[in-house]
Image 1 (cartoon, rainbow, N blue to C red):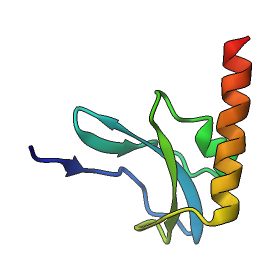
Image 2 (image 1 turned 120 degrees about the vertical axis):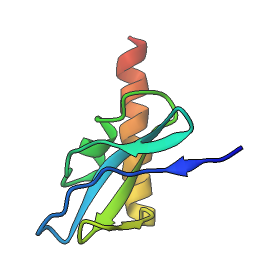
Image 3 (image 1 turned 45 degrees about the vertical axis):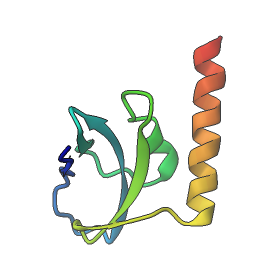
Image 4 (image 1 turned 60 degrees about the vertical axis):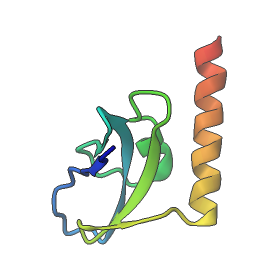
Length: 85
């Protein structure tokens, strides 16, 4: 099985921003937005199993810091609470 990884990210003057990523047909794809924070990016995840990654200088993908990961978990918890109602 071959896995192709593609992130669609436009270049930016912003040094660091966040994108929502998810898989589609065995490819990892990302939203076309440059979110200023993890919570905004998490709201852009269109399906279960999505995640958020940081982007530096429009091309370097970075894992979330511990604080950003905690923000992601809180954002997803709020979504689950609101969606379950």
